[in-house]
Structures are given as C-alpha cells and as structure tokens.
Length: 119
Image 1 (cartoon, rainbow, N blue to C red):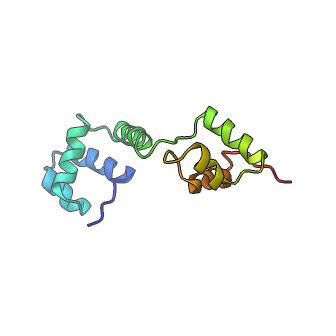
Image 2: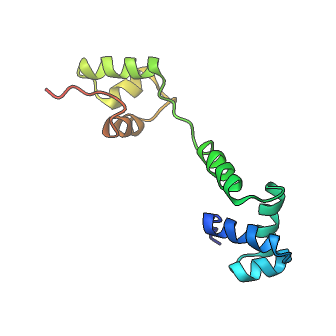
Image 3: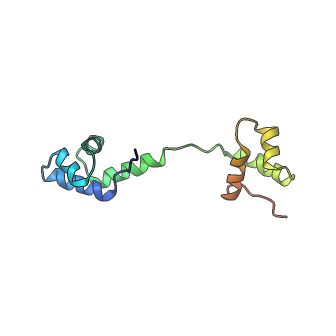
C-alpha cells in the first residue's frame, strides 16, 4: 500500500469545504482520499488554515529522516587521511570501524561535503 502526502491544493480544498460546512466523509469523497486522512489533517490543524497547515507539514518533514554523522571533527580527520593517501576503506577499517561505512565516505566525497585531493 502506498501513501501520498496531502498537497497544498488539497489542504486549500479542505479549508474551503470546511468553511462551507461539509462533513469529513464528503470532503474525503471529493478529494478521493480516505476519511481518516482528512480527519487526521483536521485534528492536526485546529481551525484548519491551509497556509499554516502546509508550513507545519514542511517544518515537520524537514526534521524527519536520518541525521548525518559528519561533524567537523570527523570531516577534518577524514580529509587529513585522504590527503595522506588513505582510501575510504582504510579510514573506516582503522579509525571508524562499525561507526560509519566506507560507502558513506564516498557519498560525502561525491556530494562535495568532504574535500578530496585531486593530484
């Protein structure tokens, strides 16, 4: 079962339909959503102002997911070892065994979060 988040347009429609006095079930039917989805949205946002509801969603979405393990000390250590011609595999095996994976170091390099010697 896949789930799609409510869009800004759907939130505006919910706000408008609530102002018109429509029930949760009729709003859900018009949006093609399950009534519980609409009900949870309304309960999360009392008074349901769509702009505020969207801002709240964006803020909460930004706070979810895995947090990076790349702090300044780790970045400095990895950069020093890369400049000393260590491979990411060697760095992980000797310094960070079990804490981070060598593929994580490669991902940080490719995304530009760690500076790599080019010569």
